[in-house]
Length: 159
Image (cartoon, rainbow, N blue to C red; front, side):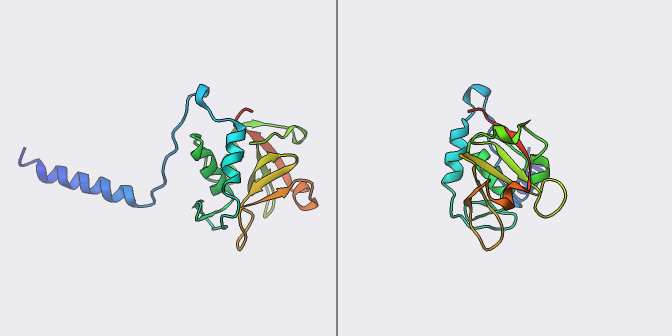
């Protein structure tokens, strides 16, 4: 056992050191019966209104668009991809005329394909982290800018 002690200590030290680098908490995955409602997703997003935009941000100290979605869903026990393009590949596609609160809205803003994501709140509005030097805020899908850039809608949670 004495000969193994240095090996055990090295392994433990490596685990501790590697665990600190780039740590992001892993959300717990809930069974379907305990899955959060769309209303819970929207409430969590609403609580973050006014948080600053931060490139690659995933905490209330600052969010980018996909970081906001990642955080909101993680707070509700749902594990989702961290980037827009992979978020666009999950969930159930929904026609734009059938958007419900909690749905993810995808936009093409800076290039081809999905480049921006937001969370629908109902009544043709959504919450998102739009761009640098701004904050998490509510916008209207009726605005010409957003309406013309809507690429698709995905549903991850029920009502």
